[in-house]
Length: 86
Image (cartoon, rainbow, N blue to C red; front, side, top):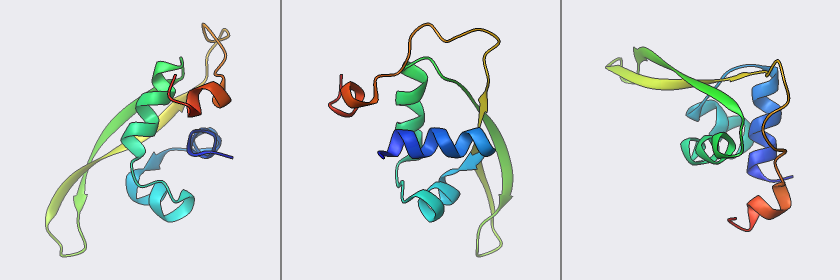
């Protein structure tokens, strides 16, 4: 299973941040994976969140949410082809 499949499967269970993606899925560049999923028709939105880093300093980060379609997406994602960069 590739990164896109792992991220999509995880988003189906709930929202996801880049720290959670690295910790749970081993995905270091979540924004890139999200961009590729969006290009393939998945309805993913970003919630801007304010919080604190481990030093107690204010920070902002994104939390991604997958929204299910009421109809089928325009096309089905071909993960084998997408993994080759097409």
